[in-house]
Image (cartoon, rainbow, N blue to C red; front, side, top):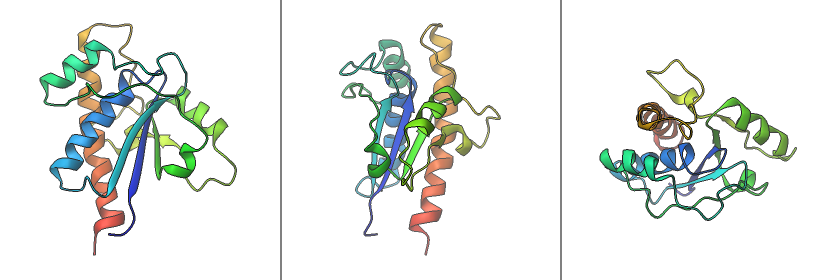
Amino acid sequence: MSKEISVLFVCMGNICRSPTAEAVFRHYVENAGLSEYILIDSAGTHDYHVGDAPDTRAQRAAQQRGYDMSKLRGRQVEVGDFRRFDYVLAMDGANLAILQRITPRDSTTQPRLFLEYARHHREREVPDPYYGGTDGFEQVLDMVEDAVQGLLEDIRQQYFSA
């Protein structure tokens, strides 16, 4: 494998859903022995939490399932991300619309909804748990775990199959 594959997860503030997806996907990629081939990052469409650690409730829920988000920090998506990343995956339709508006015309990377890769969830949007209780963070993890498995399988088929 000579080309590194790159994946960017995007939500609004980059402190709940997208860093959760980044941490979970990183865990699955490491377990698959593919860390040296897949670059993983997350960002927000808004600048509300640039430089901030993920929400403590998101970190706690992730830690309970064995995912470490402690070193992640929020950043805002940039136009250059469409040149750097093969996959730009939005958590919901509102953020997808923002990404579509800022995608350069000549970009070969087109943003998509992350849950298109889910196998067991019919929903296509990961709900924002920020204003709810802890159950929302568990629901996000359930959806993210499902979709990262589908995403990893898609990447394996496209880039690693003989």
